[in-house]
Image (cartoon, rainbow, N blue to C red; front, side):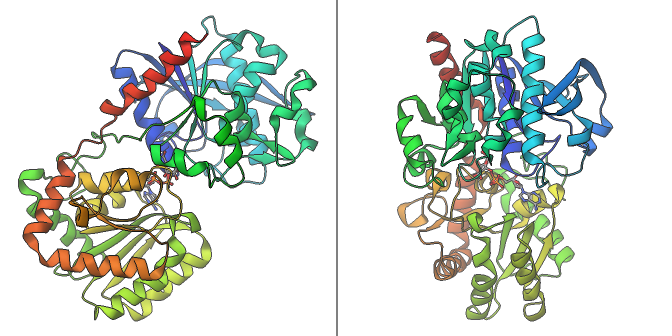
Amino acid sequence: MEIFHISAECYPVAKVGGLADVVGALPKYQSNEGHNVRVVIPCYDTKFIKENEFECVHWGHVKLGQFNFPFSVLKEKKDILGFELYVIEILELFDRKEVYGYEDDIERFLSFQIATLDWIIGRRDTPDIINCHDHHTGLIPFMMLYVNKYERLKNTPTVMTIHSGLYQGVFGFDKLYYLPEFDLAHFTILEWGGAINSLAAGIKCAWFVTTVSPNYLNEINTSSNGLESLFKSVRNKSKGILNGIDIKVWNPNTDQFIPANYSVKDIEQGKNASKERLCALFELDPTKPLFSFIGRLLYEKGADLLPEALAMAMTENNKSINVLILGSGNKKIENELDDLLIDYKGNYNNFIGYNEELSHLIYAGSDFLLMPSRVEPCGLNQMYAFRYGTIPIVRRTGGLKDTVIDIGDNGNGICNDQATVEDICSSITRAILLYEDKRKLNALRKMGMDMDHSWSSVCKEYIEVYQLIIKKK
Ligand code: ADP
Ligand code: GLC
């Protein structure tokens, strides 16, 4: 099968969060199964793109209303990622350091989608499947069905994979003229809540919709930032497929970023080496249990609850715990987390920013990983935690509910139900008790490390979806 994945991120080329991890791993596993897999993302100003060799395989001009942007399709020459990587170079719009967050994001991602389809339509072969990821690629299924110049792609099956229903790529109808010519009778398909909604259009037009965990599929029917009724109406063409992880990139036995490699046979020794390194770097006491958080400091991650919850947990437990935060995002949360440095020096530290290498050391060296998420479509951090023998403490939501079962139910982690300071604190208290029971702690660490969350078992589910819709052609 020839499969195209179209996305805004792909690890290690350009990463903001888990979307990159998925788009950097699933295609590799599909490729190992014998499929011809191509990943297409914009060409940002990133280290990976600077350091690797690319060749130009196509060029043209994207027309966006009165604007005209030259673009090139560059292919990474050696397929070092285990699939064919293509980056769409539109210098004026993407030659920048960040993936998102610019005023012209609508123009940027619309141009990316049009350039991608202009290239695909110009190729001799038509793909068997186009798998779009999140709202940045949500207009592709619509354009393939209704834009005149893409007529030949009408019968090419599309899958819309939802990593987040919160962000939808909404813009006004004043920009409708950006889209290439299509039969205006269809313009209502683009509409949701009075505006053009890229994600809604993708959900309506894709041949199939997947979410990144089964439980998230249930949740979005009742909570998805205004798209609830739409998700309900497409239930018969939807499936929740739990994300996997790349067990080569995330492997304590070979990880280059940790001081001592380890496996289930020497968990304690291995984890201690990483913990000592971390504690030395961040001036913490390695004899105390270490609680960490890694992630985007946003409301949906419950990160706003952390400053108060951590202060309370450290005070109530007489500073018998250590806490380490790695993340960036909301400035108010960043400042509040920095404020904790004053009163809790020696017990608390943080790294405000993004650091891939440090994240590996934290997964390995921590005892517990906090994930108090309000919304978590899947969550990869808890699976990385398991892989490194770290116990996740999660709020039961989205994919966290699918992957973490409370120790009270003979499970693999600590769970709570409310996104509140109190729930986080009581989970930390339970974790302290667990930490003191070394036999139980070690059995749990082993249980986590023995679990198989690899893509190899999950990637088949995507192929089954593709086969199902190809049959409908
Ligand atoms: P999301 O995609 O919603 O941010 P996931 O749990 O799916 O959440 O994936 C987050 C990914 O981003 C993981 O690979 C995690 O290690 C990584 N990550 C998040 N914040 C940082 C950071 N500040 N530094 C390094 N890695 C980070
Ligand atoms: C999104 C979600 C996260 C998920 C990731 C990869 O960023 O917030 O829960 O794990 O995508 O699918």
